[in-house]
Image (cartoon, rainbow, N blue to C red; front, side, top):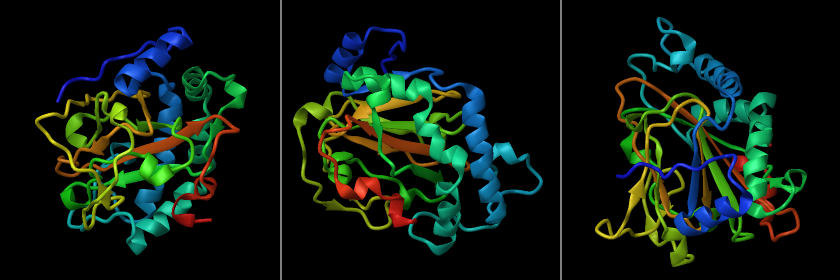
Length: 261
């Protein structure tokens, strides 16, 4: 696992597009103001607390799991009840349209910031420790997004996120392989479908994320989640997509995640 190649938010658009074309991703340090990240983190962890997942003896913002509870995840009734509330939270819904994120997307897409289409399908994830089987396998977002190939995802953890908390790892340059059919089925994993990976050929990049760090990547870029290997901490993250407004879009991308309208 190698560290991400870092990009400069102030770099010219053509330079950032060249980096994206070469690596399949752009990684920015402190792109989003810390207070904006912490506001959304607080809102998400309040819902986790209401769901009974957090340790009452720890500070809310630490995201410490309540002792003795079993991990839960997407598709399970208790998780989906919390998640429906999260998707309806104004702070969470507005987060991917913060100016720095739209400005980076605009540079990648070669349009004005006002022209960027942020997919209405906002995505958030709360990942429990001791739940390795549910970890998202290696895949390409285009398998799920469809629509325009030039759709870019942005992954941001809501809080500081060392690798052991379960960061996202990307295979540098894998977007150049084009679309790969997702034939592997991984029961219980988020998404459930993946691509076969020759680990001897893969060049995985990842690093510890600080507050406001952001990772943009191409829809063909192969990426995966790392398992939450902590003893008792929840990982909270967001995952949103950007494209040109008049490019092809799959109708499902205009609907709420899991159709939780």
